[in-house]
Length: 502
Ligand SMILES: [Zn+2]
Image (cartoon, rainbow, N blue to C red; front, top):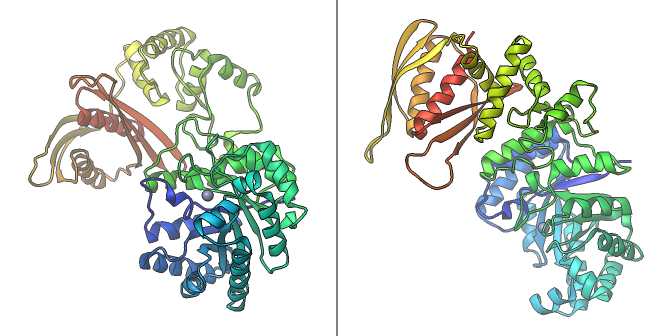
C-alpha cells in the first residue's frame, strides 16, 4: 500500500521568517522533488501574491507540462470569486487548493459570513473552476479548532463538499495544537461525512508532534500527508520530509514513492538557499545522526553491527562515522584508521588514543582528517607535508576589494599568486585556484564554512574554522585553529590540500 505525500516547501515553507526563494530556485526545487525525490504532489505558491510570482509559476507549469507532470503542481487560492481562478488560468496551473474556513469562528469573525453563505460561495467556486478545466482540493483552514469548538459546522461543510466534485479534502492542524489521539478521533469522526480515502492531513510542529500526528493520520486511513523540506514553515514549521518518509516506510504498513537516497541532497540544497541550517541532530539529514560517539558502540559495530537499526546511513546515501574524542575507544580509532588506510602497531595506537582523549578533554573537535596530523605529532615522524603555505597576505579596506598574495610550496616547487575577491578568504581562494589550475590540481567544492568562536567574546581568543569540502560522492571536513579567523580558514584549507594532493 502506498501513501501519497504533498510537499509545500514553496508555499507554507516559504512562510518561514527570513526565507524567500528566487524563481530559479523554485524551479530547481520542483524539478528535484518531482524527478529525483519522486514526491506525489507539490504546492508551489499562493495565488495572487505578485507579478513576479506569476512568472515563476508559469515557468514551473511550462516545465511540468513538458514532463507530463502538470497534474502534480498545485497552487493555494482563496474564496474570492473569479480572482484566484483567473490567476491559475494565467499561470497555466491545473490544481487549485482552495482555502476555505474550517472553523465557525473563522467563518463568522474573519469572513463575516454565515456558514450557509460561505458553503454556497465555495460550491460556486468549485463549479466555476471545474468549468475552466481546473481541479479543486479544499483546505479546511483551522480545522483542528473547528473540531474542538464547532464540530457541527465542520460536519455540515463536509457533507456539502461530499456532494461536489472536489478531489481531496485537506485537513490542516493550522496552529499545531493536536495530539495524535485527537488526530485519530477527529479524522474517524470526519469519515462519517466524507470519504477518508479522499482526505489529506497537514500538520504543524508547535508541540514537536507533527510527524507523530502525520503517522497517526496515515494509520487511520487518509491518503496523503503534507510536509516541507527540512520542516521549513512558520513558527516551528511543518512535518519534515526526510523524517516523515523514514517513519512511514519503517513504522507504518504503508510505503512512500520517495527515493530515500535523494533526501540528503535536497535537504542540503534547501539549507543553502534558505540560509536555515539543520541542527546537527536532526533525524536523517543532521550532520551527526550517523556518528557513533561512544567507544562501546563502535566496538559493537565492529563485532557484528550490534547497535544498528533499520535506520541505516546507507539507505540515505550516507556513511556511518566514528567520532574521535574523550569517549571514543580503540574501536573508533580503528574504524578511522581503516578509512584513512593507515597502519599502526598496538603500541602506537595506544599513544594516539591517549592524545585523542587529551584533546577531547579540552573540548577540541577532532575529525578523522586530523588523525594524520596527530599521528605524526606523537610518533615524531615528520608528516611529509606535500603542501605548505609559506606566505599569505590579505589586505582589506573600506574602499576597494580585498586582495590576497599567496606563496605556496607544492611538492617542493614554490609558487606565487595574487587575486582580488569579495572578501579576504575569497581573494585567497581565487589566488589558490589560479595555482591549482596551472598545476592541474582539481580542488574540491567548498560546501560549508563554519566558524566557532569560544563564548566570552574576547578578541584574542582562538577561532576554529571548520570547512566541509566535497567531491562527487565524498564529503570531508578540515579544521583550522588560529587567533585570526582568516588564518584559521587558511590553515583548514592547507590541510585540505595535503589530503587531496598525491
Ligand atoms: Zn500550514
